[in-house]
Length: 183
Image 1 (tube, one colour):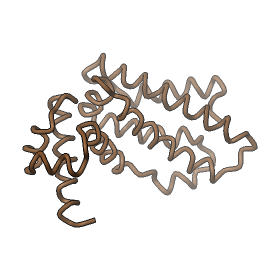
Image 2 (cartoon, helix red, strand yellow; image 1 turned 90 degrees about the vertical axis):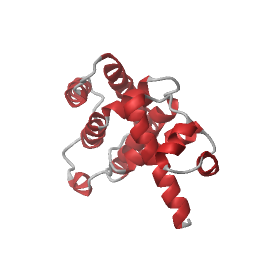
Image 3 (spheres, helix red, strand yellow; image 1 turned 45 degrees about the vertical axis):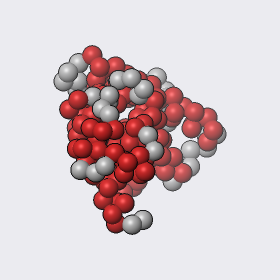
Image 4 (spheres, one colour; image 1 turned 45 degrees about the horizontal axis):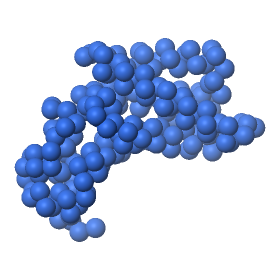
């Protein structure tokens, strides 16, 4: 990809993250273009739509959250214990952005990006381990847990200005472990 295109895309994404965190997800393409220092046409040429800009912003933040390679070595811990706490800490760190993206109008793209990021980490960990369980069943269970957790976290973000997402996720994960969904 051309450096100029990369710089434009990066500027648009960073502007979108900043604007959404400050003002909510209803920011317009003109505002995003102005904040990025590019033309509105450049934004459309690079992303196509406002939804794609917001998805790109979410994916950009999530890309900063790699799964720690040391986590792969910890065979004692559950994959959920390895993948979800860093994800929740990330959501906590960027609460204003995710409050707007997960709780505002049209949150499905952001929720899908966050859920897919968690699922990718879980798949990677699970592939490295032999569990004897049907992979399809494990995938469905993981998806259920991830989407359920995201729903609860989004509700907490919407209802509490200073939500403690890490504690909430720890309590929920412990409850799941006690209920037998932790394998």
